[in-house]
Image 1 (cartoon, rainbow over the protein chains, first blue to last red):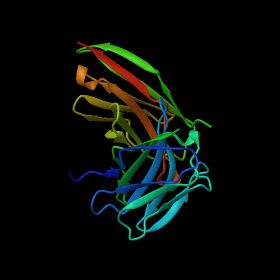
Image 2: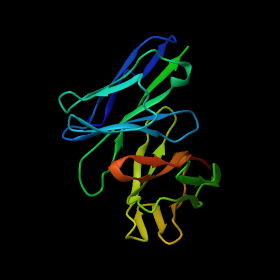
Image 3: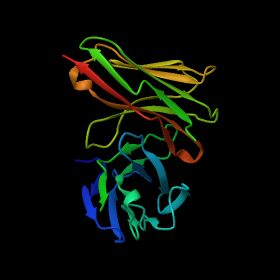
Length: 114
Length: 111
């Protein structure tokens, strides 16, 4: 499968714990995006990288959230001191710099904070 | 602030019918308008997209109609099939390439 992959697919954690998600983009895609989707809503942009540079962050990305893409390939999204409001589907997408800026999404990581 | 408004919230269509989903936007700086299809438990899948210099784009049974002056665009699904039952999202690209999504339309196609 050459699509975007995300791990884990599901994560249940207790409030206050830290969690980390991983995204592996489509090979050769230099852009990588993180979105968050709550039930019944469309995805909301969190941040994106071009190669290893983090070019934009949403105001939704509080100080407890941090994302990295150290070698311009896979990316990690860490949430520190999780809160119940962090429960959501975390989606990763990848794309290539160019005219269309198409974004291809992975299956997501479902986070449940108890 | 909701920058892309999508309607209807839910839609029920008979097999073989036409499904129409509408979106309206406010930001004239948007320059790319994709539609995504999402099945339960899956990530959104890119369906079709259009740029504002084109009024219509067709791919198979899926057509986007775009009205730049009205700041509206719509997805038409011809000959709707039960397998098309899913949630559909319109989106628009803002500066910096982030996508702003609509609220979604849950489509049910009855056999």
